[in-house]
Length: 217
Length: 244
Image (cartoon, rainbow over all chains, first blue to last red; front, top):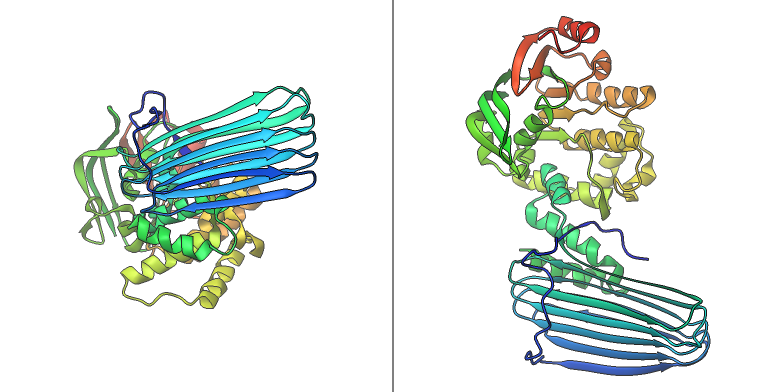
């Protein structure tokens, strides 16, 4: 389910680690949406937050009919003092529904990113499949990422998983590429591209690559 | 080609290299042999500029220039290459993307134009054939899911593609079966020339049966304790490193 990109995880106590959400932040743009997905329907949501954008993305999804599906892919890329907040609430209310969430992003500068994701599986929602992954790379000492995935399961026949990581670009990969003559900025771009690739919407690969190249310089 | 003068290096608080002196001329192949923990891998790490290793004393001249003042990528552009003992996996990055970035960065540093994609792919195919890598590996993610032998062949393929002047083979023979060893050795031998030099680091004589060194050094406890010819390999094989 998750992408196999290796990142160097921070240890507990690292200065870049978890930090409470700053509720005084006033995001410049809010995106609040509520979706009801009925029997047999498939909902696809994609979000791209580019450098310079502060966003509050608030998504509530109710899977109300048997066999409903929801897919969320989101990408963020911050380099200055952006504030990006994800708040995702996924309700499995009917049996046999499926939800897949993948949110990957890179925080540089003094960016502040928070992720709150909750999956709630109702007692009737047997044969639920629900997955949620949030992976973050922090590039500077001053950027903050706070991620809290949560599961509330009230049914017994379910397949659920969630995972969250906060880390740095992998130093061994970086040295390996540099030892072959790949300049440091280019090596970092390749690493970031591969980290984000599972969440880049189809057709926007070149745009994201362009943004990343200017980002790595 | 390479002059190492009184090199002392440490990782963390631990001094590993305690005064290495080594001179390698153009076209020469030197074997550096030694038991585990002698400092063999530290030597290759310092030569390629790996972070975490600190040079405390001494100097390294490569083609007459101060090697230690260069970044890892500048060293590669100047023709230095390390075949890693444990090649790194890079999920999400294909061999083609990786090597195209490497080859073109080197060309740029030399004032040459970038290779056109078609020309690059053709060149890559030739070099892969040299180490019997199947063409589909071009699209694989770097070293991800490769067997030990495939990883080592991938190293020698990259070496063939980058055409270094000084290659360091760090335990390239470890974990290889005889067939893979021959393929790797053939690749290395093909790249030998009167201008190109190599350092073969190993604790084992296997690779040296196929790639004949001009000079053999014994590295022990951070110092070169003996230098000689091929007879040293036989001496090590029969009596180990304790005799030095």
